[in-house]
Image 1 (cartoon, rainbow, N blue to C red):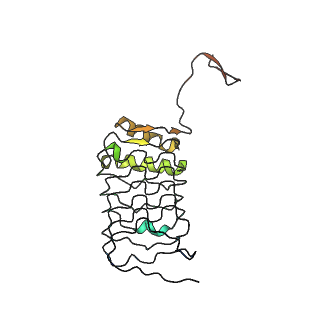
Image 2: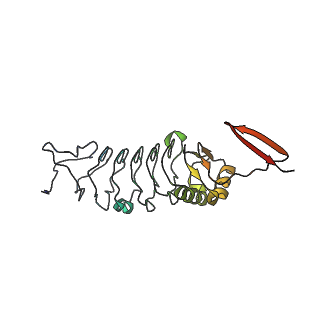
Image 3: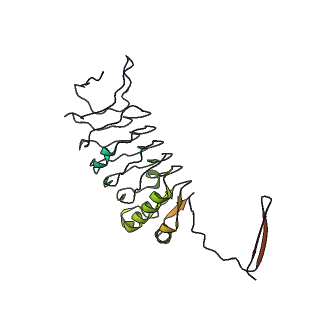
Length: 231
């Protein structure tokens, strides 16, 4: 049976709220944030596998969604409509989450901390429309995409989009994305970013090998013979 749950009183945040009730029931949907002056949704769905629907807007008073979807299975596309332009803290927001829907409408105009935001997330969407104009310290964006499962297609689109908005990112931005792979489709944009001072730490390019072998070369790679002759 489904029942509506109402929360009354002066509430500043729902961070760390338990979504499993004492009688074994679980909260599946959050229909409204109410009219209380919420400031934080930090840890709201931490480790949660039950909630599958959230409101299609977010209170303008929210400034912190750190770890909100951390290790969560939530994958509702409605949050792409949220106005997150006043939110400051996105630390670990999608850390190790399975969220994969578009977030192309998010504008992180006020963000001051995006560290580990998508680290270890299984399949993040393209972030090519994003900019980070207020991030000033590498400490505040470190390991942003580290060890996540972003697809080559989405990573290409992310790199191409960021290159088009180069001036709206920290100077000498270090894309710490250990394990990610881009392709030839973003090679030019990636090279332009590197020439502008960016670093791409721990990630590679699947089909961007660009070198010439001159003369006769022979090598034994882990027991396998490799020979190249350019005559």
